[in-house]
Length: 162
Length: 162
Image (cartoon, rainbow over all chains, first blue to last red; front, side, top):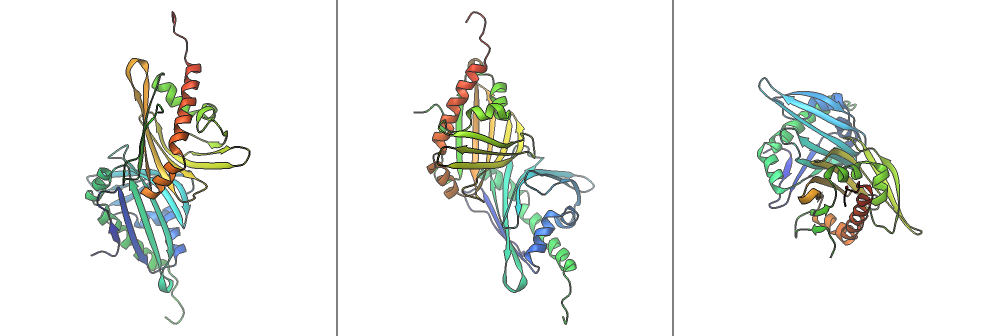
């Protein structure tokens, strides 16, 4: 079982996810907004990550491509808000144009200097949600968050006396 | 009964709307993308409409205010896509910050030179959807679309012989 709690409620067009990180919430937030960091963790490990556009501000656009020797999967959307307690953006897989979801997330304090990201994605239909889950959304997120965990561990200053 | 068919399905976070106009779809589309036109129809007739920002392109932002002598209601969001068959934007009422919806619409041909707009809004929860409906979303849209109908009638060239 992965470290990310993923819920796709029956009959409702949502995916909810929750994951804790052993890092302050500000670092987790920065890792979502700095293209050089995003490039190092977002998405499955097996793909090369190419960031085409990444402008993390209200009204900014993003577009990125996951690719291997055979395939390319491109995604794009716009940022509605990037606040740590109100991250909101649209998301569209270019392989299914016109099927857009709204991804929202908050990053909050957890116990002992840890932090927690809670995301809530809403899809245009339950069928859209199901298609995304069946395409491996959960595994992709788990893989990406594991990479983010490794990246955060490298960024953390080692505390004196540890 | 209004001319706009509005559906809010039980237990699902959607609002679906459908309305026909006696105008070509291109004119209806333009009335959604030209700030000078939007200002003349969007929202209830009883409010003054102030457009603060309106940049109708992928990644562009909008913000407008409906106001009367006592109150101001501000709304903002970003455009994800503005194509006539794939209009997608976020929507947030500033009186309920953090409650964002994704509004999608297509404008298509109907019979006899008419056109039809079909919109599908998805909310972060059924409670959010219900709150928007209870706040008078339906009446506001009906009133706005009636004004759009009047605006389109003024824009149409009078056909020869009519």
